[in-house]
Amino acid sequence: MSTTQQLESPALRRSRSRGWRWTAVTVAILVVYLFPIYWMLTASFQPRVSSANVHWLPSHPGLQGYTALFSNGGLTSLQVSIIVSFGSVILTLLVAVPAAHALSRLRSRAVGFALILLLLAQMIPSIVLADSFYAMFNNWGVLNTYIGLILADATAGVPFAVILLRSFLLRLDTDVIEAATLDGAGPVGVLVRIVIPLARNAIITAAVFTFLFSWGDLLFGLTLVTKDQLYPVTVFIYALTQSQVSSWASVMAASLIASLPALVVILGAQRFVKAGIAVGGGR
Amino acid sequence: MTEAPAVRRRRSGRPVPDRRRLSLASRRRAELWTFLVPAIVFFAVFFVYPLGYGVYMSTTNFTTATFFTGQSPFVGLANFIAIFQDPVLGKAIVNTLLITVASVVVELVVGLALALLFNRRFPGSRWLPTLILLPWLLPSVVIGTIWKWLLAGDGAVNGILSSLHLPQDTWLADPATALGAVIVVSIWGSLPYWSIILSAALKQVPEDQLEASQLDGADGWQRLVHIVIPTIWPVISVLVVMSVVYTLLIVDIVLVLTGGGPADDTATLGLLSYRSAFDLFQFGDAAAYGMLLLLISLAFAIVYTWLSGRQERRAE
Image (cartoon, rainbow over the protein chains, first blue to last red):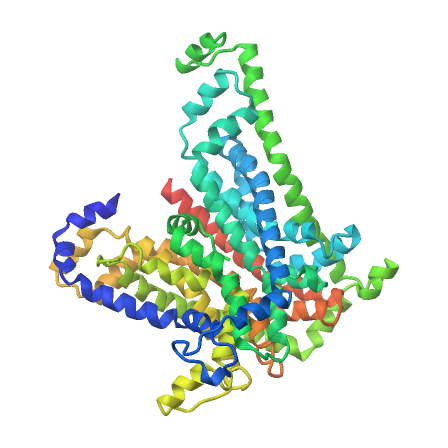
């Protein structure tokens, strides 16, 4: 790619000797910028400390913030979040993978129209959907259910996943698909045995982002669930902050646990993040 | 292998008026359309229907009672008249616009500065900049909660200010600073996305043009304005429109930080819609606010689709 060419250019080679200076600047910016996240981490290990007295490094570290959480219903909410997030990832992929495959192979004016609809769908305010979902789900009897939350959360995942997967599938070599078809593979066979394995990385990217959307959702959890046994972890944290906060260590511990998927992704799956934001994973 | 002749004929590229082949092609097309069925159903049930339902609710007196009686009397435009007569609407529109304009301007300027830094080659330049994305990936409730505490009267921000002998404040409770604090937090969450997207775009700036203009005596600022920004303009324009839409819809961060207070000083349009529906159970009003929000974001969405379509056409 063009980056390797840039490496060869003399101006850049000269500037590389001064490179460590820019490393220092970047690290300094990161330290300041990510300070709030460090504060959350260190505070979560300092139970029984009033918020004015939190130390930069815990002098008497303790896990009471975490244990208090688990006796408070935090564990249940974590379970809800995990079920709902995985559920909406599965639903999103079941809907989006075949659709993206079809949209990448069909030659029709309808394809362009469908893409515009998908872009528009990404921009519909969640609060508008939430208002209607509450009334709709009430009629269908799926308020306060896993399935209701999974369906609502998938509205963020599906349009994004279709757009991402289609743009990847367009670049696939169609000869392989032709060959498989002529060997007698049915449409489902082609999708399952050829397209999905070839598109594995794009599918993982779509899954990672859908997971993060669902995991981080506050609005649907807040509106479509009224029983606290079914609060996802985001609503659990929101509920904690709405009452008089007695233990910030506990709130920060819950926030840290809610941040774990983001931390795992940024430390372990950077390339999927980069692939995802390249096609507009904003939200 | 019985179909081998068919391959040869197709590869030759000549159209073959063969009935069997035609039916094969159309059958395959039909199969592909079948793959679209789940998506079409999903789209109809979870986007089209809720929007229609929203329009319907906005013209009826839809309250909690409706859930028991199933009745929501048609009231025409009364909900819209009611929300327009409420002085809080003007406040919310001003707040929403202030948050949006301030966030997008700061994100563009600071994001571009960060992108220029990240685009340099230095030890760690491949993976260090990506770490800044962490705040963007956090759930918004976590962003709101951390900052709510940092900005509290006895929070860390005041702690740092007091050790520097600077004036302190209860940032989120003071009408003079609450909106500014909300803007700062909203920027903290989305700036990383800008910096990473812009630094990816900067890689497309032609190196030889930069060097040529350097030889012509152009300074860094002139190169930025005349070469760098024009090259990445398509990316900037899409980013601006996209962020405007997302910031206009801001609900969750405000909800966590201030709940719209003090005295509605940080209320946004999205927040009013949430409040009408889920605090006051006036679903008709909520839907009316929602329609207003939808109109605004739809206008920007159309601009966005047009811009990104233009970008795609240019790329092809």
